[in-house]
Image (tube, rainbow, N blue to C red; front, side):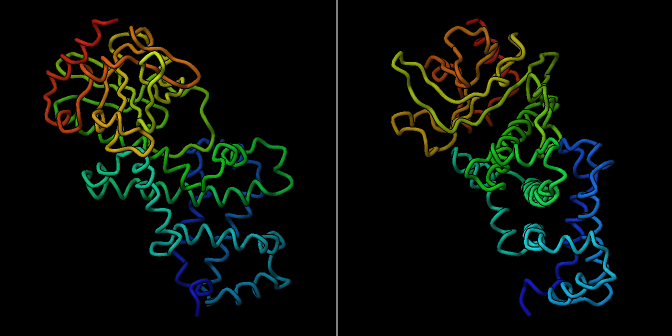
Length: 351
């Protein structure tokens, strides 16, 4: 019997998919309460998955038998209407079922996102449990997306605010897991730095809207002013972190990279530190800049810092921040907390 038809082995994955359509999973992703209160398509799909699980428990052991059960007159009409979406449902099932080719391809995508910016080496430095947490979130977000595509594809939901259509536009030609992996890779880097700061004696707290590390399907109105609040011996700093995937030099000799406006708009004090992390041999950074590979660049008070300008979601900064305001990864790991505070304060004098 083929993998597709052996539904009994899919029982736990079906149960996971049913969970993905509950408030417990969707509310932290920005899906509002009114969807649960008013949307019958969501309720019907969730009930349909529960019904499939029940049928498997009662003896249905193949896809063919399941289709026959759906086609019986005693089967509720709302379930029979789902037959056109069985392919999409099974796609989500295979995403969450460990060991399938689909599951394995999704799981490795986050490492690919880190590789793009040259940070994949850090993946192996983190504990296995932490890597598993990120992989699980990527799998769940991808499967949730496919299930909600079914819900929002129904005619009566077309006039509603459709987060799935919005996400599709943002994804461009990328697969959902590729899009979500970029978000998770950014959080992963934040958590790596957070862990290193805690090892140095800093008390740390995630402050951004993404601090729960759940992929949001609806973009919040306020992205927050910074990612991380840290404190050591009454010295407090607000950190904003960004992986650098591309770095070029302008005609004026400034370095330029992508930086979304919310990364620098909020806050204008010396306590706020922007950390730009150039990875190890990123694919989109010219070899001429290779001496800065694997460096973390610290820019305090980024909005009012001399030698720093912004335009169209890009930041331009003088080379002095690379020369005197950066540490390579190993240096960053070895520097103690007090010396790091000294670096922050020395750079702040330039404002």
